[in-house]
Image 1 (cartoon, each protein chain N blue to C red):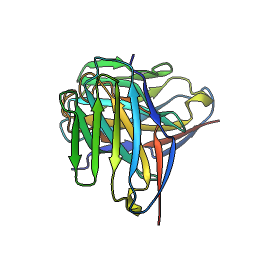
Image 2: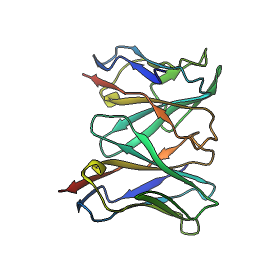
Image 3: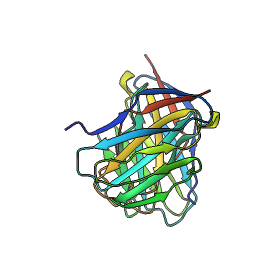
Image 4: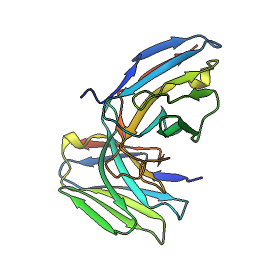
Length: 112
Length: 114
């Protein structure tokens, strides 16, 4: 089955700086890569996703890049703000939301 | 719409007891799934269903049963609780397995097995 590795497990950045979280996956058939944000005590929520026919996708301060050859994808958050503090999960699957395999999560802390 | 609802919010069980975690959604979602979340291990898929009457195993199915008799409900049964099943359980749903609309998660059930 699919295996998704996520790094780093914790990340602290100054407010206004950029944050990058990286994930690798094992199954070359995977073609859907979403990112979820989970605030403390809350449920995970989708923030951005990318499919394998696209190399990069942006949504305001958030962007995701995908390198299918190397089987890795990354989340980039620019101009970080205190409300970006949360745990972020990457995931991968062959068929959309079916059998999504999640990474182990990155706890992002924004330092005011 | 209430979205995805889960009951109970918190439960304490003794080893060997059984219980059912309830999950319901009012969005007419075809796809429903159960994940468990443990510190440092992310979200791991227990069981999933692509429609009423159809269920399948995920990554960590042992010790759990599911059924899908209606589109709305997807209960998770713990047959004989073990301390290793102490976790936070999330139910999640979406319109179809292929959509990129994202999973809608429930609020979670925190389970403690003594």
